[in-house]
Image 1: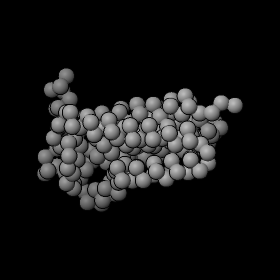
Image 2: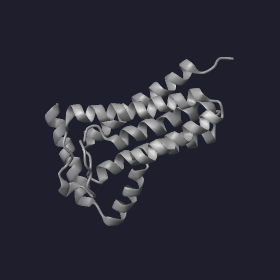
Image 3: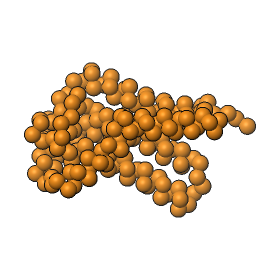
Image 4: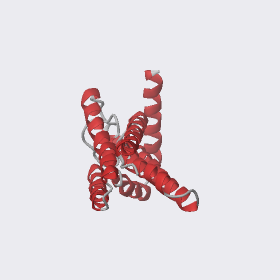
Length: 183
């Protein structure tokens, strides 16, 4: 199984490298930043402050569990696994640190996934809810794809990050349900 995954990782990396062009690369560099630590943590703090001022501390706490928990778990796993990134020749720009799991994919799935949970819960069924959930899901997919296209992660890094982030989005939403005021 490991050999199959390693082979698939290499094939995907080489495919995107072979077909990469400058315009698309620049677009995906912009998209990938929407999953960066600075951007996601900045948005998390802004949303958290907003929730606290609206006296919805349970939402701020759930968001913190989702994003900061996912980020901490990703860092811990990176340090335990020590997987090297793809070779520099494949990278559209240089990234540092370990590769597994993708931090961008983890944070995107945790943050935007938690927002999907909130939107699903707070908006009534209909076009607005469907459109918002779809847009957030597309954003997660684009950020994850950007890591592959830019050659800074392997496919298995991105899938691992998405799974980890989704798990923490779920934990954050479950935490909200557990601590929210009743009545």
